Amino acid sequence: FGSTPMRHYNGGNGSTEGPLGTFSGNIASWPASHYTAYRYKKIVDAAPPVPPEPSDSTVTWRPDGSSMYVLGRSTTGDLYEKHWTRDTGYSGWNKIGDAIASVPSAEWTPDGSALYITARRSDGAIWEMHWTSAGYSGWTSLGGVLTDSPSLTWSPDGTQMYVLARGTNGNLYEKHWTRSGGYSAWYSIGDAI
Image 1 (cartoon, helix red, strand yellow):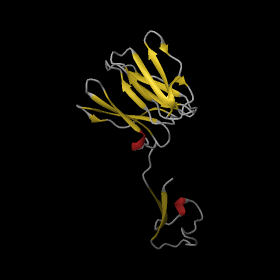
Image 2 (tube, one colour):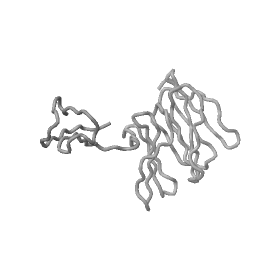
Image 3 (cartoon, one colour):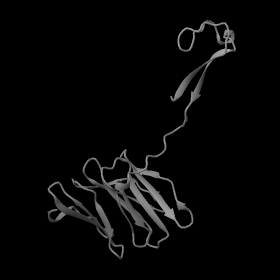
Image 4 (cartoon, helix red, strand yellow):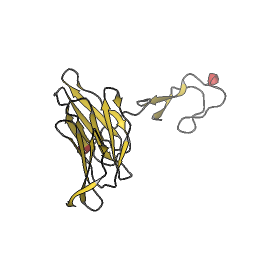
């Protein structure tokens, strides 16, 4: 609990056996000159967020240059976000997801209306979440069994998103999303890398 017992004895007529003395009776009968006090160290209600390790972070700028977002995996595997704006500077770390097993990848849509984030989770699949003015979505599995952190990019016109990652056989795999067709299946686009 973080307490340190401290024995105070200023004389008195009570027994002082043991490191803190002995006591018989109730507290009202204890001599005022003979008591034990406790000093407490930094009592807090909740632990602060664990910031991500610098090597497990990614950075992306909003297309209009108004803000920069840092996304990272903490030492506990949670996904944290921190952003910077010209007007307010840096925010604190905000937990936005959990249980990621890779460095996240993130990119804004070309029009700046949504931030898409991908990461590999403990099941080996790539998962996606996104932010819009309504807030962060939950995780959606994109499937696959992959071994590395994914990469994510948008086409310049914002009609297609591409996710790439290395599979268990070492090949590079790609999955894409289009407005008209949704997500494709994963398919290999190269030999072992």
